[in-house]
Amino acid sequence: MPRLIVLTGPMAAGKNATADALAHLLVSRGRTVVVADVDEVAAMVAEPGAASAGLWFAAHEAHGALVGRWLRSAVDYVVVVGPIYSPEEQAALTDQLPPGTVPLWVVIDAPVEVTLARAQVQPGRGRSREPDFHAAAHARFRALLPHIPAARRFDSTERSADEIASAVADLAGN
Image 1 (spheres, rainbow, N blue to C red):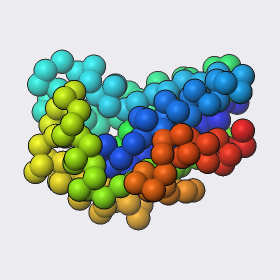
Image 2 (image 1 turned 135 degrees about the horizontal axis):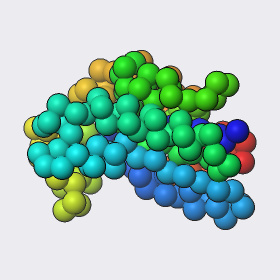
Image 3 (image 1 turned 90 degrees about the vertical axis):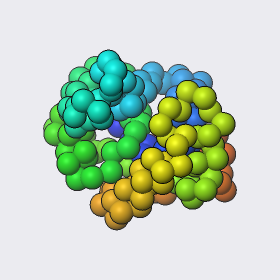
Image 4 (image 1 turned 45 degrees about the horizontal axis):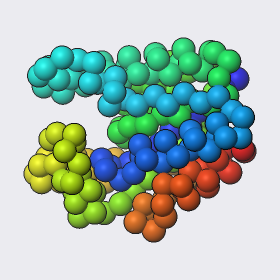
């Protein structure tokens, strides 16, 4: 059965950079890897978008179904990326998993001042570049952090994406 790694944390904390580095590392070790980002599933909803259309949770459920299907395939690793904070968001993912799947939950974190500065220099970031929206999303993450079953937490201001990816690969037994 493929191994499931869940990378979560506030926006612009480095989840996608870490997922890319982790995928590259695992592939270099001869493993097959699928990266499944909940934001990419949400982006499938045409304008005005999943959140505005009231379909954000449906995107989480569709993402969970996609991940569950990949975990029933011959890949070695499925790396999940996204804001999977609340117990309901976690259940939208985990309810779709094959029996016996034990996710490795990893939080990648950074202070709001850092994540906002990162978001503001990336033109494709959309609303996450807006200070009020960014601060509210970060506050939601902070409020729900105690409910995230993280095996490990990394501060991306202290470690690079490559360093975090290497540590996650070690945690995952590869």
